[in-house]
Image 1 (cartoon, rainbow, N blue to C red):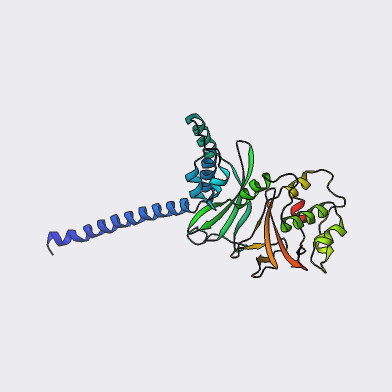
Image 2 (image 1 turned 135 degrees about the vertical axis):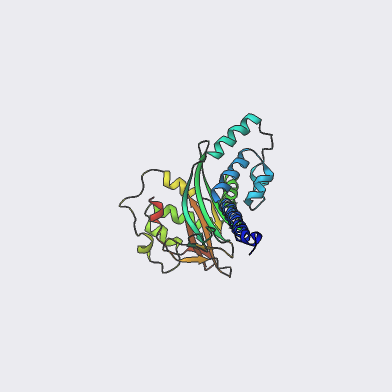
Length: 286
């Protein structure tokens, strides 16, 4: 064996070690990128910065439906550099509180082996940007976390209603149900439920006396309600997972009662919408 042959194993080992280092480095980079790409909190911070900076294009890129930017960000005056610096600082240090677990098709789930969640996963956070308390809904679509702005759009629609305007029938029956529930008015609650409903289910966990302050009533009246899309599933307080019915006589509405999600299943009976009984006091009493 000549000297060149004797040195070859050493060269091969160096090449193998060098390749291993490159592979390890590449793995670290890919893992870091995966964590960044699957980080809904980063999307929340980016979105809040874009909203306050009036960056319409960035908001359109981060929110669904994308008409949110045009519907809500109607103030197109440019933001000063000093103000942008304040917004940047605030958004980077923004504290987020997760108010709902990660769910897919209504069921809680853990991330996959690569630390990522599948498309269709949802989560909610509560934050206070410059003192303004906000609940932000997030959904994953086509591998990206996006802000689901439907509840914000609903709140804007509600704010534009005239004082004498009534909500649609579905919203009205849900809020009438909740107001009577908070007042512990059993006959009033019964009138909003489907026939044969068990009132004991609805009043499970009820307090001994009605809430004396107006806070809970105002939360119920101000609650934005969004009708679920046909491909969405949500979990009722009982744990049952429901979807909007294929026909026109059954549907699901999702409200934000303060920071808490509240899901309602409705059925049309004799031409009128009625609430399917569930126990909501666990949410009302939080």
